[in-house]
Image 1 (cartoon, one colour):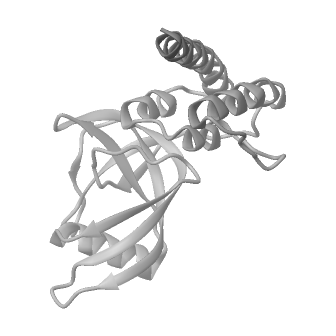
Image 2 (cartoon, rainbow, N blue to C red; image 1 turned 60 degrees about the horizontal axis):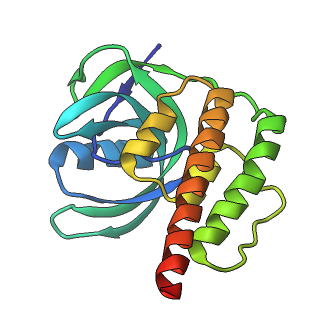
Length: 198
């Protein structure tokens, strides 16, 4: 359990994923200044329809691209891990921003056998989606999060992924999800071909 600063957003950033933000609120300008000076990480819990959900991503400040005269910032952050909220948001002492005590999941190495099962499904789906051969480096996907980034999932699907408790669970879920997506894509292609022939 750890008390961390939080920056709720309607996005899900996966571990290793880079994300760009425009910072304009005073509380988050303070948070980013501290992240720059002290190297602190902070959490981005997922919000949906204005409501805070139970899971989020730990991020680190990567780059400050622009600083405007009023103090606004264009930055990028990179995901480093996932967490579960253990208590509601509350103001942090002497800070403008909120924080909460969270449980940070310890990630072990990806179960290799599930990654090996995932890779051909991922390649087949990407090729069917793009309609052309797709090349991946031999070491990709490196994890469930890497696979999800390649698939460019919507925030709700990314949230489902980070809410699963282990890398094994995430890989099994992705394998099953890809099987469904492949079946649906093959049916779309068949319908298009049938329509063209008629």
